[in-house]
Length: 323
Image 1 (cartoon, rainbow, N blue to C red):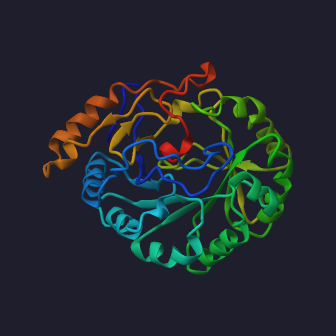
Image 2: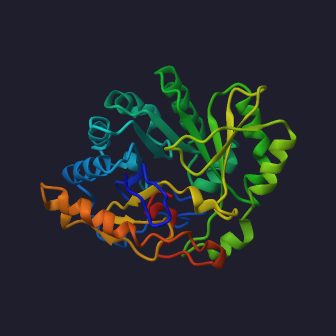
C-alpha cells in the first residue's frame, strides 16, 4: 500500500474528472466558472490506468469529483471503469445534485456505491442565494429517488458560513429525525481567491461538536477508507451528523487520501504548492513507471497542511480539485 514517510497509508483516491461547475457558490465560484486553463481533461483510457495503478498499490476507494462530475457525459462509463477494477471496493461520487434525479438510475447501474450531495441550506431561498440556482426541491427529489432505487449510503455536505446557514442548522436536525442520511458540516476553508469571505464567514466546528456531545450524540468508529469527517449518531435520529474540521488539532494525522486533478496532476494535499503531472506516464500501457513515480512523489508529502498560517498553496478555489 502507498505509505508516506510519516507512516500514513493511502487507501482512498479523490479523482477529479473536470474542473467545470455549473453552480456559482459564494464560497467557491461567486462569479461562476472561469475557463482560464486548458480543458484537456483526462480520457477514459487515462482514467482507467490511474484507477488500475492505484488499486494495485492498495487503494480501495475511488471518489469521483469535479468541478461538477455529472457535466461529463461519460460519467457512467467512468463509474463502471472504477467498479470493474479489481481491488476497488467503493465507488463514490460527489455532486451538486443538479442532474441527480435524471441520472441516478444510470449511475447506480454502472456500479455507484456511495453518493455525496452538496446542500448548503434546506431553506430554498437561502440555497438560491448561496448557489445561484433555485434547484433545492429538485435535488431533494433526486435524493428521495436514490433511496427508492436502493442507494442507502448517502451523505449531504454543507459548508458552514456565519451569515448564511450557521443560523439555520436546525433545519438539518429536523430533517435528520426521519431521513437516514449523514449531514456533514464542513468548516469553510481559505483558498487563493476567498480570503475576505473566509475572514467574514468562517465558523469553527469545535463548538458544534461540544454541543452535539452535550445533546447525547455519540462518536462513530472511523472506517479505514473513511474521509476526514468525525461522525456522530443519536438514538432519536434516523440520520447522522458529520463534522469536517480542517483547522482542528492533528487533523492531518489520519490522512488517507490522495488527489488527481482533471488534468492528470497528483496533488499530495488539497493545499499543496503544486500538482505534479503524471500525463506522460499515463500514455504508457505498462504502469510500472507510473507506480515508481507515485511511490517516489509520496516521499514529498508534508506532515500537515499550513492553513493555520494562511498558506493555501495552488488551490485558487475548491472546484479545482473537488474539495
